[in-house]
Image (cartoon, rainbow, N blue to C red):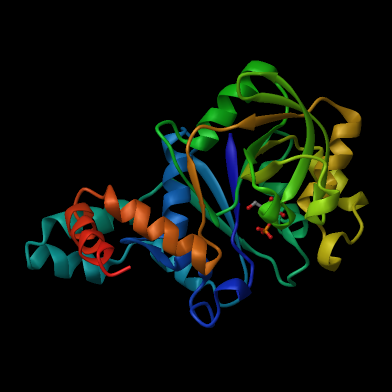
Length: 286
Ligand code: G1P
């Protein structure tokens, strides 16, 4: 199984931090957001990853490249822990890159993976969604995919006031965390949302999605939307939703990013104690 990570977006929700820095490189505690997503893929056994980038995103490629000067320097100074970490990031998995030249939407970005994917099912992982879980979220979807041999969408129940920020699924509950999905609508107004089941950025998709992109016109925001292509696929075959186990953060918004930093810092092996001390100290002043 190959994975596609679309990282071509302009990151306007996070300006001015993302004026020159790709939003995927904004750190969560001590690692850029996209590294968590690459690590999640690797932990689920995915070896080939295509990152869809765009202009001004070279920092992503540099991050996953070897940095011989830095490695040499760290080795010389006997900073072994940093040396090992930097070396390991530079050797992570097989990461490939392609650029989306025009910001024509998430669907258009993923459509750039057509040749890389070929004729196999594949994973899509949106790097704004950071999921902390015991078993990697994409691995949970992969298990379901192996069982059902069908496309699987990740789902999370969302409060009404937040639902209009997501693709929304109409679905029948089947069993435990599993749903059959009947249709998906990209970012409907809250009063028109058919359910509280939001699509989260982890998907196992069939290769037919690429033909669906060709038939998908401009959708929400005048862009080619992944949700619209998925909706077409649902007319042709069974598609399932899986309410994954784990805590998910929307690191693409400043509030979601703050929340992720605070919660993830509290359990961090190196910075956890410091973070807990800060929170305790602030507690009395809030
Ligand atoms: C994208 C998808 C949307 C999905 C969301 C999950 O939206 O288009 O269907 O619910 O990711 O994070 P974006 O957040 O990129 O606007």
